[in-house]
Image (tube, rainbow, N blue to C red; front, side, top):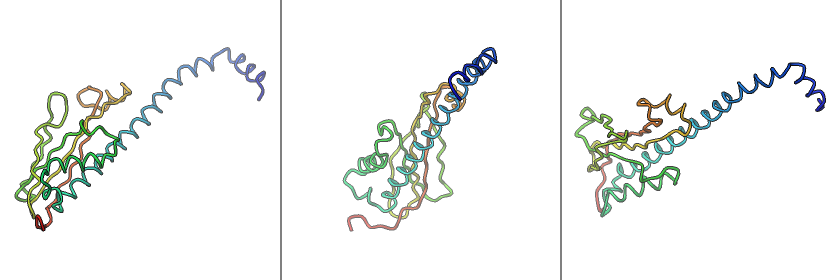
Length: 174
């Protein structure tokens, strides 16, 4: 198709095609942007879940507990497992120990800004039940998507990853 024939088509519709195109393009761009942003959100969520699993594995095997500063060792492991994809300073975590799986109660407590509240760090000893939870506040760049997906209309959601396990029967210092 030559430039002249394209011009003829546009003229023959009286510009109607251009008007229809102008109406459709913003929605297509919004749809493509929303799809890309949701894909990035799922990628970040999977990264956080992987980091929680990796750090939890070190608790389960006693590697965190045998450090002189277990909290710092856990934070380092968690942050290293995020690979710089997420700002580690913005990730909050909560590590608690329970007597048995039946007594595990991890209600999601959030502060006034919508972030995970009540963070503790109790990795437990050999054979104890431990629950590790990490959360990250994700704010959408696309306002319509953010407002549609956030429960409070803030334009963001809380990405949370939780894992529960029984610590292995390890011996510290051995």
